[in-house]
Length: 531
Image 1 (cartoon, rainbow, N blue to C red):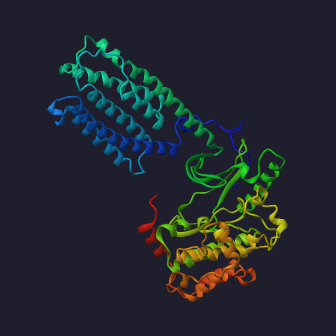
Image 2 (cartoon, rainbow, N blue to C red; image 1 turned 120 degrees about the vertical axis):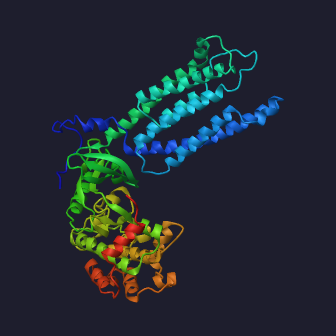
């Protein structure tokens, strides 16, 4: 494991004169993707506005004139239909999330130019009423340029070039209408006089684009953590955010969790140093775990501005929570396969004196690892969990945990062992209770207890007997497996399996057709998420 250190540029850090500087000039991928999403919405809105504007024009024409041709197709109708079709085509194209976001931004500039040409033609398609003088006017091209610069930012240079071309579409439309005899003007100066406000707006659009680009670059710079470059945001929780990351030298993908200092009491008061010390101690214990079923921890530390970080292996797949929500209960043999792997992780952790205290479907990952499928990884070891010095943790030891330092409740109510909820003495069997809750949800698709409020759920874990899975679902479930799950859910720790190893051995002894690698591979190829 790498040395634990404050990460950030220092005198010993080599200056990257190539790809690093190029990357610094670019917006982060997740911000680019958000801009792509906004362009998709803008394209749909553009189609709607073209349709509404065209229909409204015909009704207004009917109301203010006696011309019987108000309903006949006109040049502007053909232009509007073309712009509507283009907008819907762009919306359809952007529905897929795998489009190159940088190409999408360039596509947005093309959409701006075509839309501006349509506005330029439509704006001048109707002859200027008699007696009206040509005067400076802001057309719809101006707001379109500003909107594009604000919500789909490009580089200032590209924005300036595209803006000048877009603003020129109105003079072109006016010249075309003049050639058709629809507009009368004395000279080219009249054309420039009428449309110079659009050119002024180009300057404003460049300023807006420059501000948006600089903000994005500041985000990218802020995400440069020592040897790791942060990419897209993968998730956000109560303690911080998780980002995809890449090691600069090894090009090894990783996941970095940034932990807000205030969530563990690491503020500027006297307790800050103690909170950081606790974080380091717990991360060191987590980093010592070597089970293939525990997420690997590569590095951890504190940035120069006080943000705590932890670098983990990047996993491919989904959590059990997502698996059950999207695909429903799993077959019994697959549930056994999953629970045995989770037991392997917990067995090592408990032997090291670490009680997880937050075992739940959202903290158990299942996915692909190399050529293997349905590989289980237990997540979130050592971030906010208490470390025991022996096989039984006392209330005094709880006081040294990160959650207790900040008043947070350890664990999740729907999966919390009674002794944890009461603040009593606990050991690794608290994790086995939670794992029993996980197994229950795997085969039923339902939590053990439900309630309107977390306190109601906690009360049921303390006092209510759980309904057996077979009774809850009305389906036949192997009685040996059901007996093990109900044993894990015993209110008293001494009535549960003695250890994770004992539970794993009992699961293995259940007479059921094993869930094989070929079964897992077939499932992932048919139903697994596409990468």
